[in-house]
Amino acid sequence: MKNILILMAVYNGEKYLREQLDSIVAQDFTNWHMIVQDDGSTDGTEKIVREYEARDNRIEYVKNTTDVHGAFQNFYVLIDRARKVTPYDYYMFADQDDIWLPDKLSASFNGLEKIGKDDVPLLLYADMETMNAEGETIEKSLDQTWGLRKKNRYEVFFSHKIFGCTMIINRAMFDIVPPFDLHNDQIKIMSHDNHFLKYAALKGEFFFLPKVVIRYRRHGGNATSYQKYRVDPARFLRRITHLRELGSLHARLYNQTLVTLDTMRATDLTDEQRAFVDEIDDIIHSKGFKVLRYLKEHEVNFGKRTENISRKLILFLGLHRKYLVR
Image 1 (cartoon, rainbow, N blue to C red):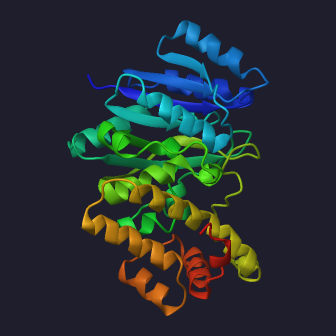
Image 2: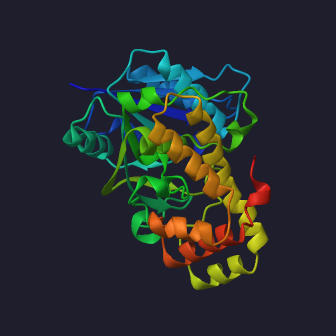
């Protein structure tokens, strides 16, 4: 039977870690192994994981012993570690504070198995429910609230709405993404999930599973807690009146894209792929009607209506450009 390697990066996660580990141990798909990499926790994280490791040999606790630390950095170090062990058929990412629904692994596994292209780089991501720090539901479906479905590969480079905790990738996908330079200053802004998704868009295929597979916890301590999912008119007006601040915020996304494009240029690309990379790069550095025509031509959708308006306005005015890394 095919197997799955789960990669979990942790740091001072004792508050919610047991709930997450319990939800993974309770999965109805059982042929998995999980590496839990600790980034130097000072609370009870190690004790908790060691406890689970002692009674379930599928769980392995390791420490990040490099000189590279941080939320994103720890994941890249862990990914490099995974490259050095026996290859697995599928790979998944896990946060320390969520709750996986009992059929998350089986639903994700079966989703890729139905596609049946082991030799093609594949990435599948799913819907999720959001909850607050106390475990109370905020949104029953983030797809319904925010719009997670991507219609084409162009959208992937302009809108980051995919979460690694809902993803599964096959070995071919894992192998085509080159190791990230751990001492590149830009690593601190690079979310691994969207980095992998862009490679799937360029060199493989990606799919959306319209099923909630996880309860994603939003609180002040997680890496994406600054994001607001529900778009309402009042928030839209606040955003429009602070366009320059919004330009800086949007530039975070485009900077991630630019860094990924640079890593892609260092790999083997077909002429078509290289032209696509250069095209995306050019549009990110452009403004005006040229950008709007491009977004319309390639049906780039940022989500709900207000999100589309604000993001396209920033790109049209070019307010993001002075914040770009290059």
